[in-house]
Image 1 (tube, each protein chain N blue to C red):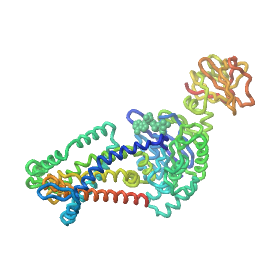
Image 2: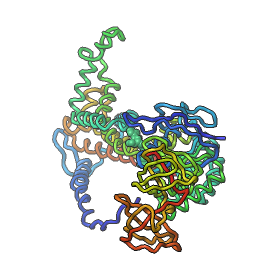
Image 3: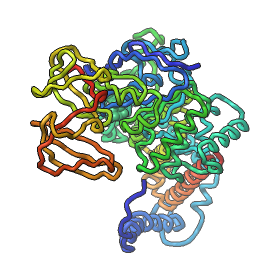
Image 4: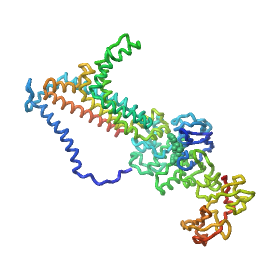
Length: 344
Length: 284
Ligand SMILES: Nc1ncnc2c1ncn2[C@@H]1O[C@H](COP(=O)(O)OP(=O)(O)OP(=O)(O)O)[C@@H](O)[C@H]1O
Ligand SMILES: [Mg+2]
């Protein structure tokens, strides 16, 4: 059991609060994606978990045990660095077995375990090679195998797939996820690729400016963003300033009645309406707009509509392509249940 | 990452270093070889000829001991310099940009001091009348001031002072380029900071460490002033005797023969070191 408990974890570099009062509970065996824009503190939070940075404040509990003061080498974690940090002076097998050999395990055991781990990441027979004789994807697997060598209590990865090309990245996403499920190891992956986070994770943690903005399963974060930042950051959202009233909202003076399935997280008054492109519908009447662009994306059709100085995106399945032309005046409505009213 | 493919280097470009090597190294060496087998005219100079008398003279226990002294002194200086320079450089590379620049400038300033200045400064500093002996006596550590020079200690101090900046300058680029994430990775995987240093940092810097050692060894082998200023006659190295024979005894053939032998011995030692280093790498 390695559930994780972060209690008010903070890290300051001078005036910069890289990680600001983060409190979280992560259940055992979950696959967590840390998601956020560049510089939001993802790497710093991961390094705090690993014990490579000392927190300015807060505590970290692993399976109920306080490890805040435990040095990195005594935590029994595994980690894959963004640069991979493989040892060029060792062979592939020696790299993978390093966590064992540093603990003084016998040579034979190290060799056997290295072979087993290399098989796990489909690199059988490559143990004798040097790191520089491997391709980028193979190095990635060596780093993953090395991180898992001692059956870590917690597996940390910092943008492990960012250096790979799109095809290999998708392939490795699936492999990493399957591997994690097979081993059941609690895993935290940093990524700034939201698609990666949505496809791999049990839990997504969205960060901005050192603070956690939302925690939850991917679909929940996608469908039900906690605030305008998350709505704008995850997927594409149409964000429209509105006025929240009793059971209805007004967008630029145009009243829209709310459905019980719509989510309202703002207090009456100025608010922000968030609608996913697939929930925008073009009709005869409704919110007025003018079609500015129509694009066929293959699996969907995208229609851009100018509404005042805002551009609203609508997404249709290819079969349901609306009969509109660029420049045409249209009305817009939003599917009941697809409307999220957030604090402004 | 692979280097971008470039146009092949034109062949004549390789001739440049070859010519340089020939003019500045091979030709003087050939002249020295020629002189070393020339016939010495006692009380005069030398006349061309071929005889091995100068080499024969060297093959005595007396000169054998001198050769041994030279090699031992230089090897000792190399070991001490690398042992001091390595941690120094590791700490230096972790300091801020400005601090690093300041330290490196100070180090380069030390390089501008000549052997003569270092020799006589140290000899004053370690002397009885004006040296640290007075300070120790004042502190009450010793009863009365004493001289610490000439001695083996004084000579080794001088050699290390002279060579340490070179060792640091050789080690600095590779040490500062070392990815700190490698050490961090080792720590996460269970290595204490000390074990991480010995299992990752040191092995990765083996080549520069050996390079620094060899540089100090070869460099101090040629030092001929410090042993006379700071050492006792028993510490006079082959370089001192070569200078003595060439300048004061006017025995150029013997000086040349000793120089040739010194060159051969040091080349052999350097080669051996590299070979041993390579074997260890292969076995690991
Ligand atoms: N060692 C440090 N000293 C000073 N400031 C730092 C240090 N490390 C990080 N920071 C600052 O902390 C903030 C968060 O950095 P961090 O590396 O955690 O971001 P990140 O989310 O990983 O970004 P990216 O996606 O670009 O990797 C940044 O503003 C950064 O400038
Ligand atoms: Mg980062």
